[in-house]
Amino acid sequence: MVSYEHAQRILSALVTTLPAPEVEYVPIHQADGRVLATALHALSPRPEADISAMDGYAFCCADIVDTGQARCTIPLQDYVVAGDQPAPHNKGTAATILTGARLPTGADCIIARERVEVHDGLLHLALSDIAVGKNIRRVGEEFAAGSTLLTASQKLDWRHIALLVSQNIKQVPVYRPCRVGVIASGAEFALSAPDSRAEINTPLLHAMLTRQGATVTSRIVRSDSREDLQAAISELAEHSDILVTTGGISVGQTDNVLPVMEQLGAACLFRRAKIRPGKPFTLMRLGPVPIFCLPGNPGATAMCAQVFVLPFLRSWMEHRPTLALFPTIQGRSSFSFSALSDATGFMPVTYAQSGKEGVFSLVPSQGASDVLCFSRADGIMQVPPGQAIEIGDWCSATLFCSV
Ligand SMILES: Nc1nc2c(c(=O)[nH]1)N[C@H]1C(S)=C(S)[C@@H](COP(=O)(O)OP(=O)(O)OC[C@H]3O[C@@H](n4cnc5c(N)ncnc54)[C@H](O)[C@@H]3O)O[C@H]1N2
Ligand code: MOO
Image (cartoon, rainbow, N blue to C red; front, side, top):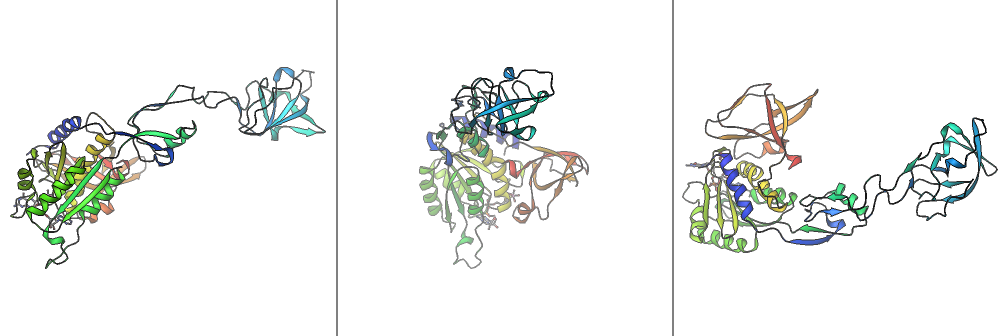
């Protein structure tokens, strides 16, 4: 039986032994949620030229003759819109220019339309409004050609897609998704069972793991037959990078996962963890395939998947050298709680802002077989063995939205 930290170390070491995910190219509009396999650099500066930031009039400050008057006039000549390749600035004149248009070479100031008057083809403006560089987005001021846009292992979303599209990048190199095989076992899921039950864990894991970017194949072994379980494990292990089983890992007469794994020649990396819920969680390896043997109670399945499977999956999918834990958030506890002396406690909690501080609260019904609690929770609070939390204490939790 291993501590939570020891289990993490074993998983961290295990992830380094796995082959790197293969690289494939996908069109940019299919890149949301995929993990970038190489760094990408800017092909051109942004803005790509000096660009107008306003609808207005472009001219060259040096063309304006100071007559000692507060206002001056310039004849209007050209007209430039975004998408034009304008002719060079015509000395002594101003060009009407729209936002986003390329600045004519030689012009160095743009004055906003609402700050001037135009009569009979002449622009009337205040001398005090004139300044070199005004209302111009200079070439490369956002980033220069060759700048690093994104680094490898970045999980892509709309923010990164916008950046890449701005560079006309149409295809991106990404890691292939992790293939996860999920097997739930139990006689109670057969419709023909005298006391048939809903099978919760495969839909739960399917939703959780696909959201993380994996492709999931599920099997439900609707009996406690060792042969059926062995067939399902052998079949999925062939086509999966990671296997997750649920149920049948405790010490009941029909808890077949461990004997079947041993029969198949799987190595046991640890048997049971000092955590609540989820104590029976066992880690195995069949050839190159890590197998997470999760307890069947749906609450324990969900907790172990959040705490162990997701960080492991993330490490593999983002090709990181250690277990990639999710960020935690600090807040005050609105309840008291004592973890067992020999087990790390994990609790679903809500998180709400109260003034300048975040506050964690308990959700109803915290049992290992319970699922209501997760539907009410915002994240998972972790409490080290033997630690007592009092009302008002600072605590930390991982929010589901950051996972
Ligand atoms: N004598 C002992 N009994 C138990 C121990 C122990 O240490 N000694 N550990 C308990 C703990 S902790 C847990 S957690 C459970 C886990 O047992 P299993 O992994 O063997 O799970 P099962 O017995 O197959 O099922 C337990 C429970 O969960 C329900 N279940 C299972 N799979 C699903 C599913 N896919 N969808 C919905 N519900 C599921 C199942 O119907 C049972 O009610 O063992 C304790 N016992
Ligand atoms: O550890 Mo079990 O998951 O508490 O009921």
